[in-house]
Amino acid sequence: MLSRSVLCLGRFQPQQVTGKRNLLKIVSRSSSYGASRLAPDSDQAGGDKKSLVTAASIIGGSLLTYWIVKYIKNAPTSVHARQTPPHTGTAVDIRKAHSELRSDLPVYSMEEIGKHNSPEAGIWVTYGIGVYDITKFVPKHPGSDKVMLAAGNAIDPFWHVYQQHNTEQVLQLLESFRIGNLKEEDIISTTDQADPWAAEPKRHPILKAATQRPCNAEPPSSVLVESFLTPAEFFYVRNHLPVPVVDIEEYELDIEVELSGKQRTLKFDELKKYPKHTVTATIMCGGNRRGEMIEVNPIKGLPWGSSAVGNATWTGVRLVDLLTEMGVEMDETSHVHLEGLDTDPTSTPYATSIPLSKALDPRGDVILAYEMNGQPLSRDHGYPVRAIVPGVVGARNVKWLGRIVISKEESDSHWQQKDYKSFSPSTDWDTVDFGTAPAIQNMPVTSAICTPANGEQVQSKDGYITVKGYAWSGGGQQIIRVDLTSDGGNSWVVAELDQVEQNTSRGRHWSWSLWTAKIPAKPGQKLEIWAKAVDDNYNVQPETFKNIWNLRGVVSNAYSRVKIDVK
Image (cartoon, rainbow, N blue to C red; front, side, top):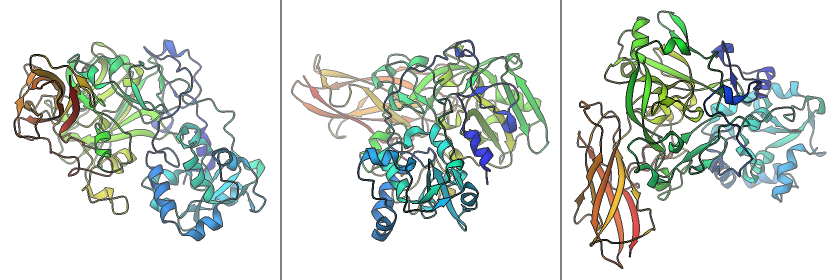
């Protein structure tokens, strides 16, 4: 269990990563450097914008809103009658309830609270002056492993980072668990802490944000089909934590082989001495097109459209070259852990893993990239070094790479074990067992209509309308066909593949294909256009989201559909 002193490390500043990292060689401290001299685009983010977060976790995950509603709905009436304080009637009241003394409740010291850090002893946390018993809530929460980090301690440092908590729903639920007041001298204040989001880079205004802190944003889908290579400014942004500020002069990459005990540390200049390798690859978020799946049934996750995807050239060092030099040999059962420099308040980094067989395969094209489209990586896209794992879900393409470990075991991180997995449509949060499903690696075949947009009025020209989109399949599979229909599948039009990856051997087609189709259309018609892609293994998209619905809304690859009015 983390001590209070460790939790107080949650008073971290915008992450200035320099030199050797403490434990994982991660140092979180205030930035004393001008960000502009540390990274190509490290501008200070200006102004607060209203968060569009659809859900929050007790310490910052993405699933709490669902559990709030579910818990409140199912909880016995007596629980609410006993625990809900008398002043929770308005948003204004509930937002300050944790800072108000409850004269009807006892006072506890942090020493007493610290003894309640397990299910057996009870799980207590503090927020402001409030003491809360969340023992019954934790087992029902899908991110319980994260919640337990704060057991017997204050959640203030966590919520200083994960600012999505400041909603009436979340605070209402927390206040319903209140059992006491914290001794005044034990209160952990965050008023002296710098804003962990102050050093966020500026983003292009074309990006539509699903959340601001952390930034998760995508461009309009029409932008994607304008260029085979997606400009970095228009490339979707998927962040889990504050963007670290990295001093390139102090950057180090640690590599460790657990079985042999071999270790090495590489500076950025040392990495660049290795032969350069460039690969053109599409990166797609595991939740791309989740917004369409949400229309079938509610899902806990960011409501991504069809633009959480982009295609770029990536230049860097082949991972196989580094590992071979360290004596790592092919092993079909081992794993490569990839850890970022982005960390939570306990200095736990974003981390995940891929099979060693993928990393050591020269045809797998896994690289440690330091350039994107011929330019140094921007901060949002992993400056100075990120992993590019072609054909694999975006979650494994770790940004701000700081540590690589070769291990017999898969990463035990939350993002490897408790997220980015898919289940049967009949599996819900009461029955799900994340241990029964493998972590997503290769993505399935998919496509999306990018223009016209759903609901758009489209001008017919010579009896046709033009439809454009992208198609992609994970695992290096080539798109061989995209079919479209506007009459419910009675007749189909085969799209023209406009821009495809050239001179690529079978199994190494890492890029998307852009396509165009001419659909018969007459003025006054209302059409619903469907699109489906086929890859060279003859995998094809499923027809409906109903049959592939899953509680995390991942691998959302059913037919793409838009409804339009023809002028």
